[in-house]
Amino acid sequence: MSPPAPVLRITLIGLVALALAMGIGRFAFTPMLPLMQDDGLLGISSGGLLASCHFLGYLMGAVSAARLPLAPRWLLRLSLVLIAIGTLGMGLTDSYAAWLVLRWVSGVCSAWVLVLVSGYYVKALAERHRTSAQGWLFSGVGAGIAIAGLACLAFMGVGLRSAPGWLVLGLTATIVTVALCPLMGDELPAQRRPARTPAAQRTPLLWGLVLAYGIAGMGYTIPATYLPVMAREIVASPVVFGWSWPVFGLAAFASTLLVSRLQTLFTNRQIWATGHVIMAAGLLLPVALPYILAIAAAGLCVGGTFMVVTMVGMREAHRIAPPPDVIRHIAAMTTAFATGQVLGPLLASAWFAASGSLTGALVLTSAMLLVSVFALVQPAAQARGSRA
Image (spheres, helix red, strand yellow):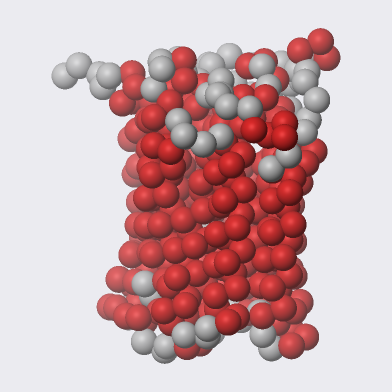
């Protein structure tokens, strides 16, 4: 049997890698949290700390991604293997200390996968004049979230406890990783690359964009951590509240495909700014209307924008930076995003501990998102076109 066409192979590898790294390695904890609560293993505060430890790992992975001398092809393979192991480990122990380590490892590796896919696979598709396929590439995150969410909905439906649920997800990640690794090709260098970009090839980081990207990380992460929990407080039936996370993932999946068709009409930053406004509205919906439909609408707003922001943010990095320096820009933006992710659950947990509600944290992050729009609509942001 002949190998898949290069564009199809590249798109599928990027899509599946992001589905594993993000949908399972990074975000499966969100729909698993209610199950772990039902098992008496976690509460709101301890769950928030576990999420923050994961996001701290993601931050450290983002900081180190541009400096690692390991060959990108082998780094991507290693990251996926460790994510599978980390997911399996969540079901093999009930030690909170071990969970902190496992979630930290999954966070580090998730960041490495995102940086590698955003850097090399986006570039590979652009070089083949198939930028439209980049929407499919980033849709992997939403696909992974939706699949993990539906799996957790099934776990709740049949009364499966959290430990076997983690094992099912971990075994799935392991099988897919084993099948995926041999398919990686020349789009990912198999040799070590310089740990630092030569000074002559560096371009200035645009700190307004970096900050806005970081605020997006903080803005989406509270519903991304607590959306099923908020839904369960309103409707106790898992058949109802369990759908909040699959809806989030399906919105993320569809949004990148839709926006990839709009990028000939609008600039990256115009789409990015619009995403911030919609995300801010999504954060306010559960505050203004504490009903299950508002929670679902919030999932659509936030799920439908956070991967759009990621996709157009990565495309903008390719536009403003030459190829030798683009990984440094992507790493800086991912580091800011990860910093926001660390702060988000910590803010939410502290606010909940002080007031018994997430309302103040949601309002504050919504306001920050709206203010950050000004960094994205400056005159310099209106240049059309992209290298990616």
